[in-house]
Image (cartoon, rainbow, N blue to C red; front, side, top):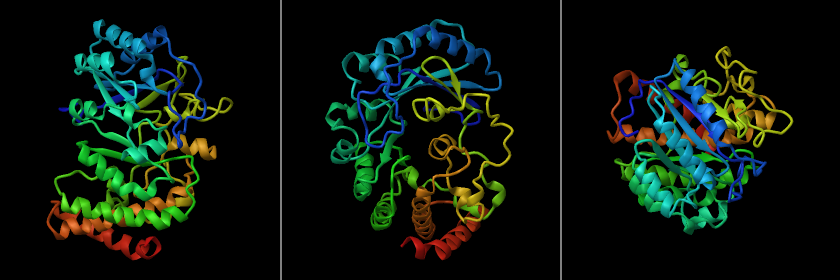
Length: 373
């Protein structure tokens, strides 16, 4: 992972180890936490199938997912050990996404003995106070230093909730100071954001973060500021699709049923209405945009989750409009940060990219600044 070649095409295969979790986070989008779990034969047949049917890819990443996958430590060990002794010819790795509460003792020893093949990523929502509000008072059950020390290039995943948004800047700065090199900070889906907390807290919190990053130019900005502003100038650079759903990513439920991604599985969407892999050919869709967003200035830099669109609106194209104001405020904050970085010569750009970035900053600030301040 430290030397990953991004020119190589990687397939992401999600294995849902279990639908159960030992926590009940306030914003969790998985509504059905059943006791269902994958068995070893389903796991083996899935892995074999993917190695045999991934000729278009250079390597495979198997994501061990949940629920909380570490509840099934013995199954995880068996899956990895079995895969290791097979003579699969394609490079691969396992990625374990975890809340960290069960990663201690023998589990840590096993991870350290399998660093070449198994990577672990932690979900942590910031300061102990914020994390405990969001995630069942679980902060003290996590060995945070273990993840910082042994997975130095792995991002930490932080979910921003409406009840803790007023502490957003403190939470992100706290994670940076713990030693995490990259922070993926996402705004929770499926909750009622309203407008009061967004309008009254988010602009000020992002201003604090902008000033923090300007004062610490060696620190990589969190994903809130990961917006490629020139895309609103050069429409040809607009992303047709924001993720690998149904193309470079596939997800398997606990029973081996195949889905375009994990958000289409019945424990997230519905026991009655689901979209299985192949029911929509994501390779044939030419335009993934929401028709209602067509004339929005920042539509080309507004990320889109097709699974959560389906969960919330029953349509993979219809965005959750509650998040519109959040994305606009992010765009204004990002434009401010980029402008300051250019003025202070903190970031280097190629001439054309510099011109497009400056033009995008002007457009954003002339069209959105008043609305978002």
